[in-house]
Image (cartoon, rainbow, N blue to C red; front, top):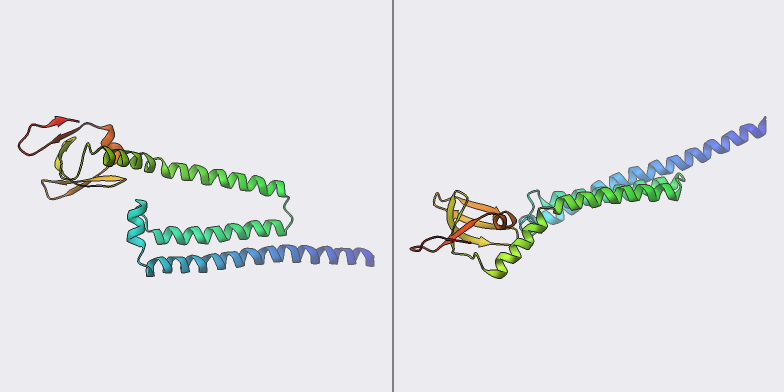
Length: 189
């Protein structure tokens, strides 16, 4: 009877130590992820990179929030993996989880870039061939205006109504654009 109680005590201690340390790893990872995420966000904000990164990456969300979430969830992910290893989850299960996670990340990344890459290629084409350039007057669908800027992602057109229209370069390449100079008849491009 003493041996059984000793065995139960030892098993309980092992389970408590194993799962307790795994829980401690996860809690530490969550806290560390939040702290380092906030520090990353503050560093980007103090360096005043928000606007520059947003323009460079061509994104609508704040880069400081993206960086904060990336750092936070990366650290939490590492902590979860370490906790699973601590409780003895088999390496094959860990590999399966990592493959699934990698697949989800790859699909997400691919979907995020599905509009981004065609716009860059179209922007490079427009800039390289100079078929449309800054200062040209164009008619696009029902809009008339002067091209004020062409970057890798968008073409900016100043319209008669004093508004500026941003047209994604890939959309501009797929549709009929009529280019004309002041005083000349429009030509189809």
